[in-house]
Structure formats: structure tokens, C-alpha cells
Image 1: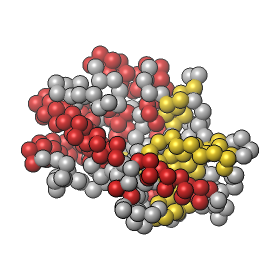
Image 2 (image 1 turned 90 degrees about the vertical axis):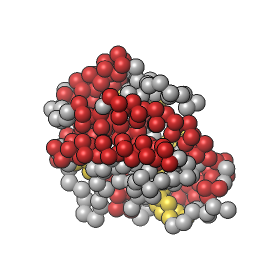
Image 3 (image 1 turned 60 degrees about the vertical axis):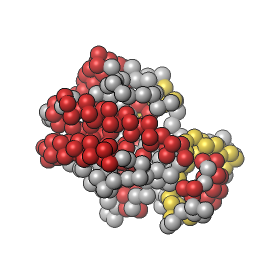
Length: 339
């Protein structure tokens, strides 16, 4: 039986076993391993016998090249050392590497495990105006660091300068979960989005960017923010990060406008806002919907696959609205709650 055919519980059991094997290569003595998330990747909280806490990530679905993983971990280590941005700092294994390769029964090839410092606080979840302002400020500090930082020799970030980031296009060729009619609509949207999106990329400053910076990837504790989940980091332009964050802001028009303004104002306290047109920004927002669908149809967890049909219906409704108006909106007729 392949890993993808297992129940979520059985998948987690296998990953827990390899996580414990990987921990034998780190200078920690685990007392407890608690599941935090089993979705795109799988993350455990590690409590040690000495009372310390760490986060352990198994890269299950993001099968990135080792050079890209090492670029992500090198950037995190540099951010931790060089800036005031609080990030999960990678812990070195006994051989000095920042990750450990593992094999999982039913999975082809190797997966990678990384152990990182524990971040205090809770996921932001519901952003407020002050928190969104701070999110913009934190993003600008990351961009400031990235613009001056030099990648170490032998590591390489992927280019995330296409609508699908650095993933293959799974929508145009067709997919068993997508009807021919739905596919035709998605292709029409891609044909409209891609040229405008590429205009924004060509006009921007290339640098490492987070690539997935939103309220569920930051923690908030007594007015202080920390940033995590750099798994999608790569070489892009600052406007991409801003569009990705804006995509996840509240979807009613009035609150979205207020939050977006707070995001931009927070960014401006550190560095100049990158230039982009409304058409380019809306193309990037529409493209983000397609990125998520493109990843979702390739995921292995049972919960993710069960979500595809409902999410696909929402994508179709939003993309029809985008084609009609040229403006991306999340709240349109036909969209239903996912849970």
C-alpha cells in the first residue's frame, strides 16, 4: 500500500517513527512528540527531557531539491542572526547540516526533516488592523535583509516568477478531479493572468521572498510578531509577497480595503512600497487562487483530497467573477464555506 492510500492516522504514525529516528541525529533528548499539523507538510512539537521545545518538520508534499531546502534554512539562520525578525532558527544536526534525510515506507525517495526553535504565541488567525500593520513592517524587514544578503555557495532558491510559483502546471493538462468545462475556464483565466503577472515580475527587484506570508504563518503574543513557514521561499519580487498577504485578508470590501491599507502603511515604515498597477495586483490575487488549487490536487492527505471538490467550486465562482470584472474578490455568489 502506498503512503497516499493510508489513512491520515496511519500516515502520521509512519512519520512519527521517522521523526524519532531523525531526532537521534540532533543534540536533543525527546521526551514527547506531539502532532501540530498534517497537511502540506507534517509538523510535530518536540518536548525534550531538559524542558526545551522545538518544532520538527517533515517535508512530505513539498519535495524540493536539497539545494533549495538548504537555501531556506540558510536564510532562516541569517535572519535570526542579522535582524530583529523572530523566526524559527534551524538547529544543526550532529554532522553540522541543518536537515536530516529519512526514508518512509510507501514513499519514493527520501524526505527531509528539519528541527527549528520554538516560537511563542498563537497563530494570528483573525488579523486586526494593528497586527496587519505589523505584518507589513515585518515583511519589509525581510525584504530589506534579502536585498542585501548573499546566498551561501552550493545552495539555490527556486525561481518563483510564474503564476504557479515553482510548481508544474497541473491545471492546463487536465486532472481527474477537474471537469472539461472547469478546465476550460481555468485555462481562460491563466491566459489572462499570466501576461499581466509577468509584467509585475519584470518590473520588480528580484530577491528571496517568503512566498506564503499570511496570518496563519505568523504568531502574535502581546503585540509582538514572529514569522514562520518559509517552505515556499524563493526568488521573486516584493509585490508578490504583498499580493499573497492581501489575498488572505478579510473578504468583505470595507474591511479588506482597511486591512490592505494597514499592510501597505506598515511596509512603508521600513522601505518604499514596490510599484505595481491595480491590474497587476488583481492578476496576482487571482493567480494565488490557482496556485492553491494546483497544489491541492496533488496532495496526499485524505482531508486535502476530500476538500478538492468544494474548493474547486469556489475557485470557479471566483474566476468567473474575475473574468467579468477584472477585479479579484473572494466573496462572490456561489462561494460556500469549506468547513
